[in-house]
Length: 301
Image 1 (spheres, helix red, strand yellow):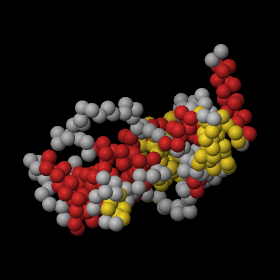
Image 2 (cartoon, rainbow, N blue to C red; image 1 turned 90 degrees about the vertical axis):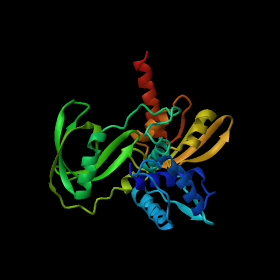
Image 3 (spheres, rainbow, N blue to C red; image 1 turned 45 degrees about the vertical axis):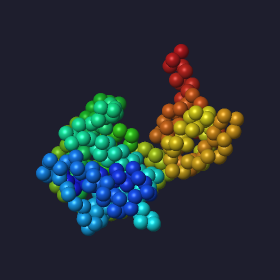
Image 4 (cartoon, rainbow, N blue to C red; image 1 turned 90 degrees about the horizontal axis):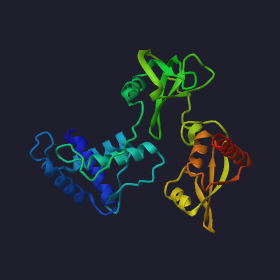
């Protein structure tokens, strides 16, 4: 951990802690107080925080972490209403890091998540290949056949879903599909090959515009579902999709509307709280979920 990184962590944490209440001078004073704990560590010690350095750190945070420290009436704040799971994870990680003491140990009151992100051993290699436009040869595990298949891919993007990372890449041997997603935890070996010419025509944004997760199949449509108050309040606090809105709240039930692709990832989100779920429309989605429940009942008789 170097001084600049620690400054950036403390800057985000301070603005978030006093969201909309501190001006620049207040923030600088607070960060210098936090650095007092590191005054015996030469490489981390900081006795002054010039405004020019503050502005550079603010820009670095926006460029590197896509977190904008906004200012209104000379008071700084962070809009935490992110659509990106990655931005939320970054923000949570920064709060987490700022709780670490000078011995790089977590406070005893912090209980960490035991579930791990998967495929992280290849994250650096793939991100470097994306930046340098390098073709990759991967051995990719098939969960159904339990075989490993060799793939030649041109990597373009990294995408996260839950605790999993995927690389969005062009399959060199399948020109019919603009790009495919490959789960990093299914990669068994990886080799870096030569450079490839980037295809600027590939659209990575539109396929995911009206969907969640990794699946891009199905056409976007209006979906109306209903939950009891307990589950409904959970969805209000943790929206499934940016199109989510409340249609009604009555008789201990909350009704939600989405405009979304009702694919596998969306269905999995709905069924996480299936004990109170009622699908109102579309009918084909209602029938599909009822069929899942029917098969589940037969398996558990």
